[in-house]
Length: 208
Image (tube, rainbow, N blue to C red; front, side, top):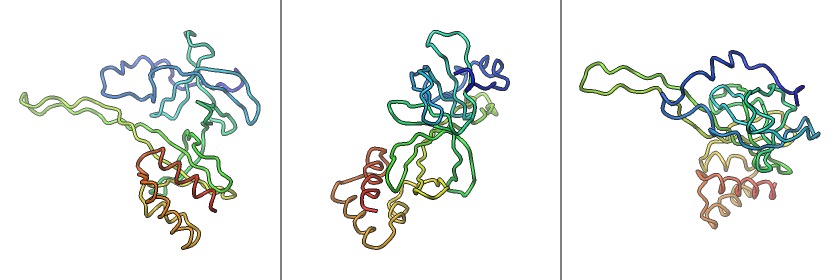
């Protein structure tokens, strides 16, 4: 495990910040959760991890009660499996066409399509009130969830907007598009819900 760890720049200064002074958190979970650690296909061991979604950083402990915190190298061959779902550092393209790097969790590993979830955090600086009649606006962390799709054989991961029109655009022909529309309607799916989005992507994969 030590070979997969990397230094966290300014680690001590980051962790001396009192996050309780802000609304929200830079972490997807405040606790260190168990996960299996892999390098490529080789299982290295079990660790406890915490995802800093603000800095796109995975902090780990080898035991939950360990005092020191280390960070994983941002190596695309390192995988942590959380509840059986692989999470790794990847390159992807957001809806604005910007190429980015960060951690994605794979939700669908299909024959034709892969679906990923990204959780990221944005920090907004607080504002002092201009007068005594209005309260100060505290600094806050806001958490967002995005989804990304990759077609097998294509070296590109693109953001998948949760709109019916964007999902139907994945269809390769008009017949497949009509099948997607019918499946969505007949099952009363709401693509704003992750569970329904996963069902739709699995259906698309089976019928591609």
